[in-house]
Image (cartoon, rainbow, N blue to C red; front, side):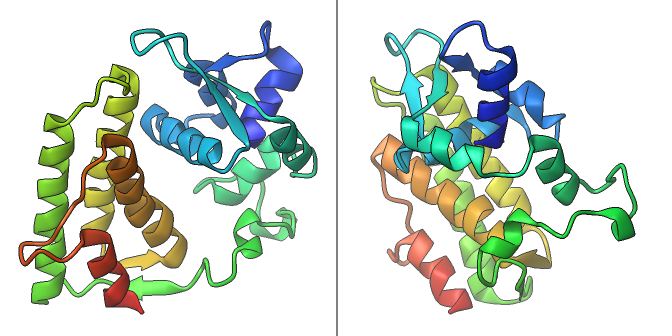
Length: 207
């Protein structure tokens, strides 16, 4: 949202922005696919408006009035990026006290993935199957760009599931929300081998 505001406020020739224009503000901290997915989530929350003439045209984005009000109280984009960068431009002692993650209770809580457990392996297999289902499913009202973004998000979720430890925020945004967004947009349900809903199975593991 901060990147969209920065692009709109400082650089935009038109009100609606392309993914590329927004992505430039992120200094490659996020992939284009992940950027598209986050923009779609913000659109669901009413903070971003998606502007697309038809399913074959490029997707553009702009902030809603509520989105502008929210973005105006956020720290500058360079401060937000510095907080999440693995190689910040300043030392930890100089880093600003503000962290966007601190506003989310429990977001820095670590969760461990037991790669030897059957439940872990079952979820891994189900995510692989979800990727196959998503790849083979493309409703007419989903553009190629959006379809690619959803699949990219699922593949990123699968990579995250290979980790041994994740923060709660990584689990929530990188895995669960990726699955939920793909299910909603593609109008499918991802399930475990025994029929349990995949997202619910993941949530149960960490409750």
